[in-house]
Image (cartoon, rainbow, N blue to C red; front, side, top):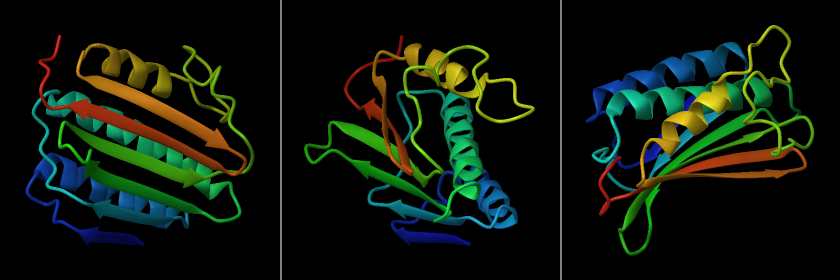
Length: 157
């Protein structure tokens, strides 16, 4: 089930289409998928193709991990820093245990059977192309979160 709250996001068709496809995927996996947009989604300091690729990988990983967990939820929050200096996109999900954040970005590393392990390695590679972007990762027992921060004032590499 996709639940979108606060600000509308269909003004950015590539992202809206991506979210609809991930909503379908989460429904197939029996995972609750909530999107909360606290501000208008303005992607200007990163190529939309790169942004959609990163967001797609993060959402796929979150849905797959949540499907294996007890609580089965994924939350996407879109917001801005209070001083409006940066946009942030946070993907949080339930998971079956604690994720080892020291190895998940390695090329070829995967906890999933039949997967190549290029997803998070690719995310890190894309994010590193942009001086104005950062990726923050948090892992606790049965909870995982990744937050992309895109600074408004800097120019990409």
